[in-house]
Length: 617
Image (cartoon, rainbow, N blue to C red; front, side):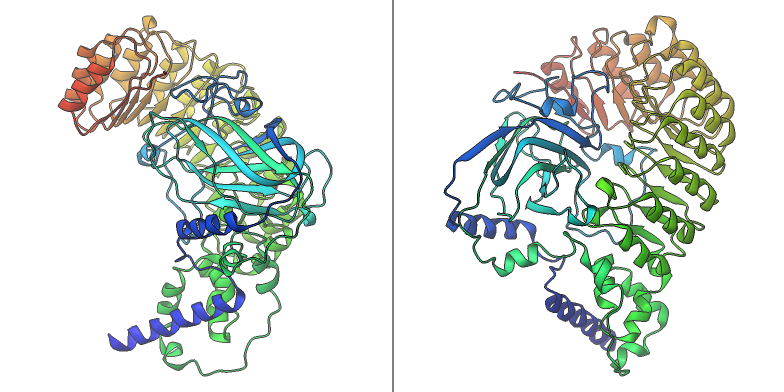
């Protein structure tokens, strides 16, 4: 036991020595301590002597998800533009910006995905929104008005690029102004979040907020964002502290480690590595598997032995580059190619926008590294075009999971190539321009589908026709997301429940053409006994009979959302809670027969269930 501890200590010392030499920050650095230190230092700095401008958001240019519809303003990111609509009021208001999910509930649903290994603990972001202001300034303050369940913001970034002019990707720079941990604040109070931000040496009118809503009890709502800044920096910035240097390390910023440390460093000729080289190869590989990608890149430069281990393709079977989206480019992918020949899980979500990754660079990478791919995450990758999907279809014969969520720049024709990936088990096309022809082709050829997300796909003309093909072809389907499908009727539901007997999760939230009077919800409950999650959000026709059928026929329900109905009584809810012993989340917000007193009584009787009841002041 003692020799093993000695070896591990040596390994730890090597990592720390290399980390100190390169000026990077370890993951053991506590982000809150850094922010506190920076706040103290910020108060001592001399700000520019020019007039401070205060600007509201001019335009929302990009975001990862939203609760609202693509064709309205209710609960959409567009509500961040202009003057505040709600603040200082607190509550659930349609005039605010709301993301699609909250809490940890979605991680426990059948459609949830396994997390990637070796994710840096400093990266906590799950959602983002990018905001443009009229005039580029040196930021002095950022004000974020949170009007419901505040605390989700984990990072604020500024970009050097002007969103309205062509900027070379090599000249685009993202700088973190503030970072911190998410927190579950008092959801009944609005908050003006005004963190101390870092001074930067360029002007900006493009600000990005990143959020993590997992600790929150309900949806976080943002009302407005104000950018305070000055046109001219008359005095030089103070000499940065060592803490600032560590905070702005290569791991979170320019990612120069991909382009410098991966390629061309001269290794020491020393061949004596003490007891470490006597360890079995597999044990060293296991130890290194706990390091992040930047750590691997740095450790590879310490000696030839560790260089060999750090370049072993087995270390890159799972590779998430999402935390490094700000600096990833074609050169990064090129340097990674030789070690990613065995990659099976690849996450490129959020990467490559504004030209930093080209179609050619992505295609070259997939041609070398695509053969073993099983899972490919490409959420919010706006560089993707039809050629990219064609390359994926050709070079990834073993692909089972493809996430194209919010890739809203893909043209409709591009999705036809997805039908060639016949082994797909999971397909996410949330907020894309997929059309009916391509979707029907996918459903006819991808017969192994188990999870299908079609939420907010507004270009599909006839969801009843789509549903009939789903029922006929997708016999293995376990989860189906039809969030905000505009025209599905009881005929489509009948086809789905008749053909997809394995369904455990069904999202019919905000589907206005479904009516309880047709018996569609009763038929659903009687034919899908394995249901664990059912969303009937904003369907005013849901009634006691529907809830009682769910209680009788779906004992494994875990997550139920009936927000907005006027026809469900406390008695029906009690029956649901009594029969569904596994139920953990029940949303009855804006249900007119269910007041706060009823919620309190039911919560007392069923303490294991989180019953949600939103409000407005």
